[in-house]
Structure formats: structure tokens, C-alpha cells
Image (tube, rainbow, N blue to C red; front, side, top):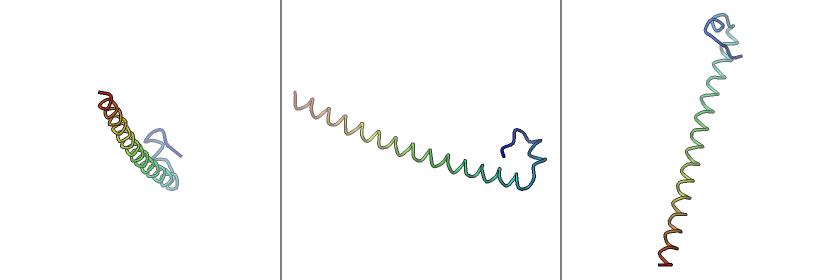
Length: 64
């Protein structure tokens, strides 16, 4: 269970506090994973763009 404010957190049971800690850790791991995957996709996208640009440049050079 997630808590709206500190007041509720103080009155939360140990089990609820542990659950919140576990969920927070999970969210942090998930966030890190998402950032890592997005970075990989960005690298692939940049590489594809470079290959595409190189191909276009080569075609233009052949035409000239």
C-alpha cells in the first residue's frame, strides 16, 4: 500500500512499511531497466541513422 503523506507512514504497520520499501526498490530497479533499454534503443537509432546517411552520401557521390 502506498501512503499519501508522512502522517500515514508513521501509523503504518511494520508489514506495510516493508511492503512500501519493497515496492520502492522494485520501482527503482524498473526505472533503471527502462533507462538502460531506452539508451540501447537510442544507440541503435543513431547507428541506423549514420548508416542511412552514409548510404545517401555514397549515392549522391555516385550521381555526381
